Image (cartoon, rainbow, N blue to C red; front, side):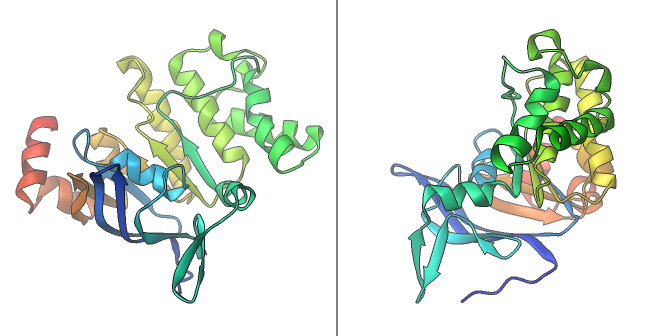
Length: 258
């Protein structure tokens, strides 16, 4: 039985991923400590988003193991062999892994506060009163208490993304995954979402952020990971990876975005 340090929140071990015959991830190894903010950079098609989706088992892996707070995600292990968990068990694991998508994925027929309440009520079985108090506190935290009764169609893209962050937080996850959370936003709306994420980072939330926002990585990340063609080619402190990259591929990428 493999063991995971109590200080580690996400432990990715020798992960390989295929789409048919096409290999997307090659022997990916990465540990994320509790309370760490890890920013994953890389060109389109490098496997960044796929890696995120593997962490909460939205994508299955071909080889390797992924642990979140010591729990093997998507499988049980007996005598060195892996067995797929039932959907109910996988759903229970996902409750501890929040995810914020590019396109918000809010329920259009629900108000902002109803979107945030949905998980605690429908998944965790909280009373509507408790869920409403939690949802309002989270909307206030992301600066949208005054928009609580509005529908997604009445909100800007940046406001919708902040509601999506509040919704993910409402499940009180062990880790928050962000899949290019600002890429679908108009440029003038990016800042408000990044400020919300910075606030979360200051509270000690464990975060893995796939983004092209190098400035955010420099300011907030504890560690920066650079991926290319399905592999992690460089990782380290922001000042190391961003200001003094050693890998030629990292150097070439940053020369185009900085």
